[in-house]
Image (cartoon, rainbow, N blue to C red; front, side):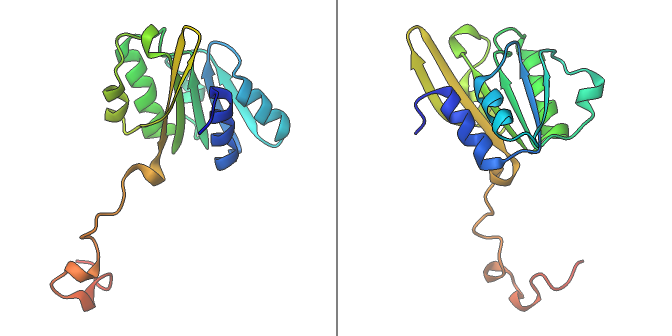
Length: 161
């Protein structure tokens, strides 16, 4: 398990190796800076604006990182930002939030957006939580969805009605 948010984000970046990276933050994110320095072929798009400007909102990214944003936004604005990214712009996302500074947010709100709690970091007075979303891991294939449970297993994946 990662000991710091920077290590956790670097692990996510190294795992997915994004070519187009969107970073939405009010300040610089050390993990993003380190990753882009190490991978100069990665196109980094940064903004502190939420909602996203139209020119950024209408593009696809390999990964989005949201940090130090949700604490400043209303719950509605934050939900629209995360859901919009998830639905239209990215297949993978990492969100770093200080829940104590964002009392309008609860852990269950992130679960409702199909996110998973990846890690929790405590240092001095700060408690950061890392949530992730990956479309490929969002839903596992149900056990019953195979030919064994069909009335005519020999026709499974053969005909389209």
